[in-house]
Length: 204
Image (cartoon, rainbow, N blue to C red; front, side, top):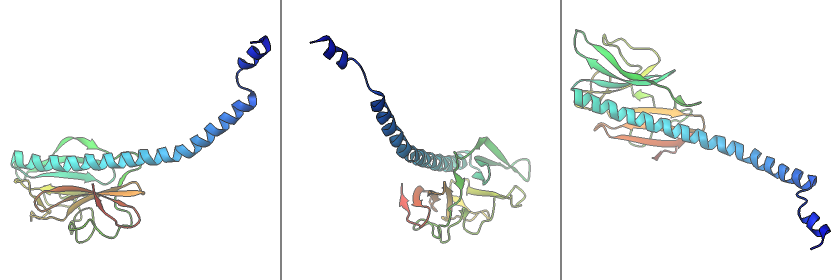
């Protein structure tokens, strides 16, 4: 091998080659960045739905194990937590368990423009229980900007009047998809997902 051929094989990349590779890399990054953002958003929303479903199940177990009413209390602006009802001193009070769990990123409580609930759940799509406007305090007064899923001392979902119900549901969205968590009259908890534009619910 001559000195000239050795020099040419070890000379590295030319400036033109480097610019070409850099250009291709930038195009690939520009295409991948929005896709990565969409994937992360979907993971966040799915994670929030799982967290919400698990907390509903925990509220149900807490009611049955403590033989008292328990509820998942949702502040529509800040997040959710579990509360149990303490009967004494009269008239009783709701006691918060743990801290408030916020939703991730741009996720919010809501179902966007969807006009129908998941099949065989609510007759009319709404946060909480059909006909219930808000959670109530121990004196029976509604609490603004709130939604509750309430369980009696046997772990059966009830409305704010104490009547058993199978119309409880919670919805979260990131404006690209909607997740719904529904609670049947027997306490069965299901998670659903739909595109944000038209109700096309699929059980998860």
